[in-house]
Length: 171
Image 1 (cartoon, helix red, strand yellow):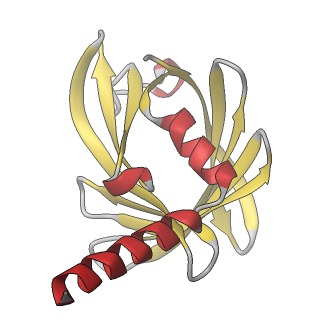
Image 2 (tube, rainbow, N blue to C red):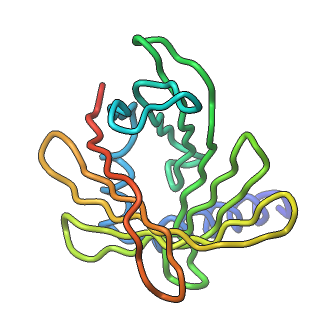
């Protein structure tokens, strides 16, 4: 009997937690799952030799979160994994929390905000291995078969444009 009550309790908690994810966010995660690729030809230099970047998004536990990895590509071949991502609905603050960790020890944390059905923004604080912190933002505009993402440095509240990528879903 005690075992059955425990199982029912965990089932109830699981169902309640799942119900808290807004439909728009669940739909957005479904849209994101897969591999997205963007040309990096505009930004290549002697230190940045990848001609493209790709992000692979997979479902997290219970299809209520996303796990991602951003990697470089050169001549169609995968080079290095640069960033890992976790994205989930934080029911305490009622926002999409975004975490990312770089291969070089930097990590970022912040929130994704839905502006409207086709536009969103992310604001994150990053911390370097020596403890220095800085803010960055991204805006994303979603189209039928692709999305455009712009990255920004945020200094004293001002958004300073860095790069623009057009991401195409591969599968």
